[in-house]
Length: 340
Image (tube, rainbow, N blue to C red; front, side, top):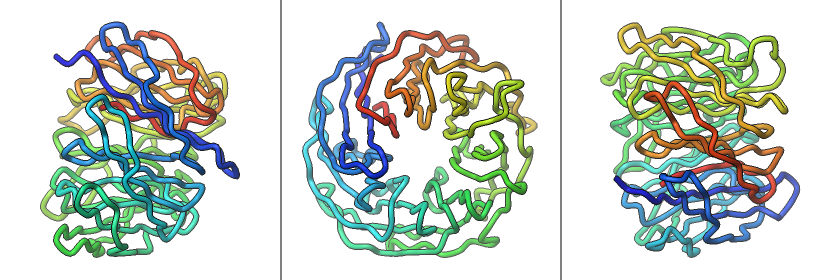
């Protein structure tokens, strides 16, 4: 089993040109991080995605309204390849499985865009632009990559699209929208490893909803709505990110609640499609905007945006419990964590 992983931390602050990408090595045996490289990138390195062949890293710069690509060296180090202006301020990126298209969405502009990826990971022309909804927050494919889902915080729905990889076009599915409970503020969505269910964070209500996925039609149907994520008795703040353990038995949600910020751990029952809260783990910092698991579910790293640190946890007891391994200071305002 691989011992060393590469961790990418994207950071920045609105109204500043101090954004950075930091490249760390992660020793899975000791759960320690070691800085390898630091790049100044301008605005905000808000989100990243790696190409299917592992050779290119794509970065959304929310502050400057740009998308960038970097080649990935043998040790995980990055070298610039291309940069393009997109049609809004991107908050998320996803790569289709062919590696020919980059999908991004714009919080301020309420749109979703498809950008061509050319040879060598170079970003190309805009291929498609759709109105996905106010405060669009993420672009998530199903396992087949024939369908794309865009949660929109402002319009309180999940937009559903069909994706044609050959033409790089998005077309509305039927129905085009799945409404959430009033005031939920849909933010991030994650699919179960089986592909039969998906999990949605309600940012404004600090809740988790579960959906069944119809793989033929490419549509979501609500199973369980608005399960509370926050620490009991602490209802202020907002929820942010969601991930599923690779074994499919547990779902994790980050709560941004000041010094009491946490990761909520839910058990998932694949038979009923429902989740049950198990416990909370404090992130030992403030405002965990984003967090990540390694591919085998052995380590979880939370990026605490307001305390500018990342907390490393060993994942124990099959995913039901975390063991805190330590924190590392990073560049101000960590937005994104990726483990590869």
